[in-house]
Image (cartoon, rainbow over all chains, first blue to last red; front, side):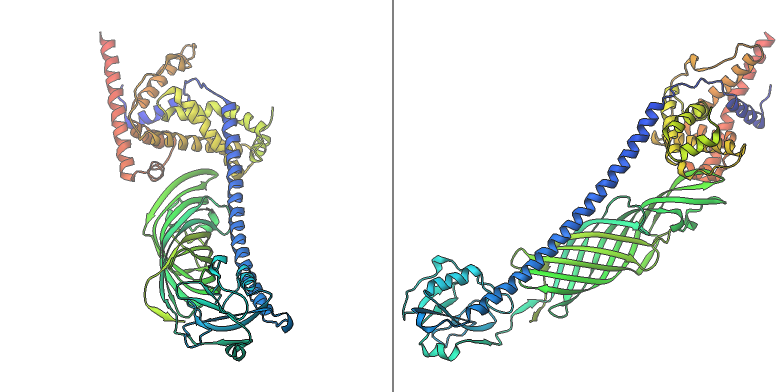
Length: 405
Length: 192
């Protein structure tokens, strides 16, 4: 018997149809367990993502509360300082203190240089005991000037002197002196209850700064299901236009993971067979992000910055990889495809963010920046409108030219 | 006994009772499909079970139609999912050649005269097809038995259309050679 190709094919088809094999190993329990486990796993993953979201919100709200508390605290301290200026009856002035703080003013014998203060204060302080008054000031942690410079380093041991007409000299820093003296002094009379702003030698601050930032990134297409967290890591460089406004740009390596319903993914580049309908897509995308943001410092002092930023981002898509399912004649197929350097998207995402910086060294600051990215147009081979949210954490460091404040 | 429509509706809403009925009814069918692709008899149940898990997890998208189209559609869908699961399994093992013999008790041969000969013939044919290298066997089964096009095979197996055609050609040549050898042996036996 000579077998032709067609003959072989027919025989194999018949054999496959009337396959005389015994089926074994039917085990509904194992299928059931797998189904239940997968359902539980998906529920757990959902709960986990909710927990992370809650944690993120909690962190964000904590940061904001902390910042507002700090601002309120400063205002309260200023109010306390004003209260101290109210003169009590002179009869009770057994010992009268007078604090004179200035910057680089050595001409007045009662007033000496005090650190880097930018304003000149002559504030009479009346109390039973000048030392007590000073301690009260120390305890209340009074602000010394409008730029929120604090007298934080004072301690009881720093304060020395005596009552009566003698001057009490208290050393704060190597070059800082606080003098407390009798109210009858002529110099004091001249300056009593006066707060004289002084144009001091301009303090300088570096104008360029850089920050290394990294953090998780959660992406979603049309706010549908969230797959898993991606990440974002990179460097941002900023330039201070004014004390409050800066321009920031940089480069970030982003990996975004997402799932999308078929209707939100343009399937032309998947090259599906005719009469196919894309059901869903799950994948990730590696990109270089180049943001261009304007930053505004809402509240700022030497230790803290609370800021908001807004701008646009461009994306250079490096790699996209997708697993997808599609239906054709009521059958479901699954497949996957990957693409390299598929597209460059210029200014197609809006950045909105708020952040918080805390000074941790002489120049460096810790930066925490939650953000939201909203699409202006589609991205990648699927032309998806990808929204993202996340939180960047990192370190900021000033590195170039100085600016006058 | 539940009718197919009720079973399908039950499966769409993820009712485990109906899922079990469907599993029991179509297990044999799925097993025979997976058997063509998976070499080791003992590994087939796991592939079939994985296939059914996929089926039940994706049942929400199933569109119920009128009889008898309903059952044809269901059979075609089960077939596709089982084939995909089997191909995934082969790819997981990098399409490595497998060794080992099929246990004799795995075959269900009829004792009736005529049907027994046919059963033996089919058994031999299936054994020969299974003896092909995994890549050839998969392409041969997909094209000849399951009616896939070369483009679809290429997409499914992540190979080029040319490779698919080449594998099919080599699989056919291999089988023809084996069958020719068998028929020569038969002729020799008759002449003696």
